[in-house]
Image 1 (tube, rainbow, N blue to C red):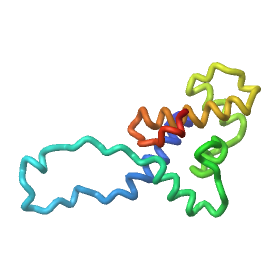
Image 2: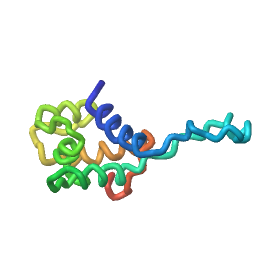
Image 3: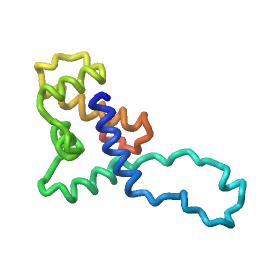
Image 4: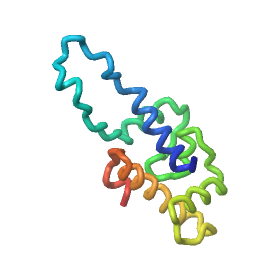
Length: 126
């Protein structure tokens, strides 16, 4: 499993844990409604991360910092880890220019989360 998959799993997993289960439907529920499987609602990435940040015990600028996002999720934020993430997400710039790479990474991570069912504020991806 790649680092992006782990990021997605951590964020979407927290959203699922916070969402009440719909499997406990009343026995008299209409059969067609019970048979229909609604599409999964988009995961509100901002809400999940805000909730995690409230309990982080330290201020983390996860909206604009890939290092802080990784810390918030309890993941390795080392340069090597970020270079691996850059490779996984097909970064074409120099990984020696860490400032540029980090800015690209945070935007790309949020863009990829949006592509995979995450509801992400538009200004996080631009």
